[in-house]
Amino acid sequence: MIKSVANIGEYLIKKEDKSPLSIIIQEPNVKHVIGIFLNKFDKDYEYETIRLEEFDSKNYEKYLYRRGESQGANVTPSCIITDIDKTFKKKFLHWFSYSNLKNLSNEEIEEIQKIKITIEKNQEIILNDIKKTIKTISNNEINNGILLTLVFKENNNLHYLLDLKIFRNILINRSNFRYYNKYGIQSIGNNKICSLCLKEVDAVYGFTSDIFPFYTLDKCNFAPSFTQKNGWKLYPVCAECSLNLEEGKKYIEKVLNLNFYGGFRYYLIPKFIDLIGEDYYNTIFDLFELYSKDPSFSKEKKGWIGDLTSTEDRILELLSREKNSLTLNLIFYDKPNPKELKILLSIEDVLPSYLRKLFEIKKDLDENELFYNNNISFNFEILYNIFVKSIEKDKSKKYYIDTVGKIFTGRKIDYTLILFFLIKRIRKNFTNNINTKDMTLKGFMLLLYLDKLLILNKPKMEDNMESQINQDIFEKKSEIANIADKVFSQYGNFFDSDIKKAIFLEGVLTQKLLNIQYRDRKSTPFRNKLNGLKLDEKRVRALLPQIQAKLEDYGKNYYKDIEKLISEYFLKSGDRWKMGNNEISFYFVLGMNLVDAFVINKDMEVDEE
Image 1: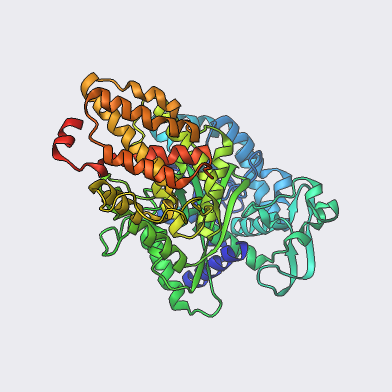
Image 2: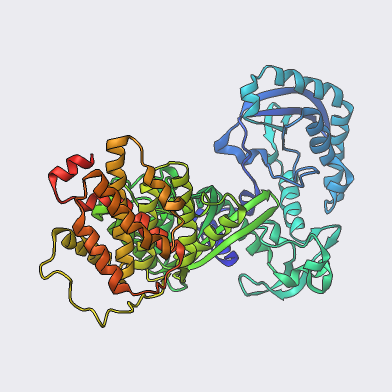
């Protein structure tokens, strides 16, 4: 992954002919700039005034901004104002301390000291002038951010930090310095091989993990030989590759830092095969650039399949149309703080052709009559709702993100695990008198999706008495039997046993009874017989005669063909059902929610309404 980030940076640096300085400079997220103006006369400095200006986002490099340690000064005397007193003293003034002037020439130190003396001499005036200036800004504008920086005036010419060689050198030297200096020690390997470019170089550094904090050396026991000085041995990176990493990270954070259902974020990191030409690089990065400016730029493009990963991110669908000249890494992460990157899931080397398969199966299911008529489209939000909203615990989020990884890598997914979370969510809705149809159909859609991907680890059912009974009870099939056959044929892999068919049809029959009860009584007392959808073989077998009796009591038993069909499948299934209770409950509620497919008589339909 890290090598891919460096390769991206290397490509962009060459394409845009970037200097090391432009790579190191960061763009502050502010709307205003407060400049401390110093006049230079010969070799001396004099404080002149404070000036407020709009932040120049097109020329942000002139402020020479780069963050430093959270508790210390920045790399240059440009800092974002939070609390003005603390920022002025701990960020701005502290920059001029001796510890921040290491590795400078005597001449450079002398120049900085002159600036320091001028500022310290006038610090109370400067601080008061800054506060007066801030008072002229509305609270909303203050919340948008203010940058504090130095501006020099010489012979009526204004010079920002970028214009002065001394500050440019300080930025470059201190940026390289942080690659090998930390915790008060230095980690450098001389005449060693860089782990990224694989070249032998004069020096490799040990603390470049701060660029992309995928590991840490904050504690000695994480370092080779328990010595932080040997950090370079863990992941040696040369100066040039460090800059490549900087640029690659900057691009990924800006363009390929994407959303995923459930509030998760991930980096999309392309990895190109070695033999492709520069034109293909240009094609892919042009696509990224267009997408970053307008995520829906090709929404009207012919053949658009629709969202799979998030309502706002469509880049995966666009990449699925590419050739297998690159692979994709999806790095799901959490960032507790700017210095820590906690990787939740790493999905590596996903081919565009496999992405295409994910979207094609989605498209087929979206166009399926059952889901299309119920306005259901497949995406990972379905998976999130099944897992995370069935039990509100962190553990369920782990199951969710692990299952996402298996889908993207084509690894087997446990059928019973999906059913456990799915039926738990359905039961929760049922108990709270929330309609179960939407969740049931979405769960069925998910199971179909995984099955079509050939990654659903589902045991194959075998009927105990199938070899003994090969003939239908009826010589001529009823209309209900024909409807049932159509449903079972369409979703054959999920109706591979007679007992599944029987349970499903009993769910259909149960919903028929509930519809009649609600029409006549405006209540559904038979729901209590369903035990909160916690069903097993004994309960399901006992329900059939109870449903028949109730329908006869109401004088509306229009469903004798369904009852006979259920009895036939029960007979074929034998005495031992090789099904868990969650699966039994799911097939039952699936039948309840597909009841509309089993209307065969107009008068019956009106009566049920």
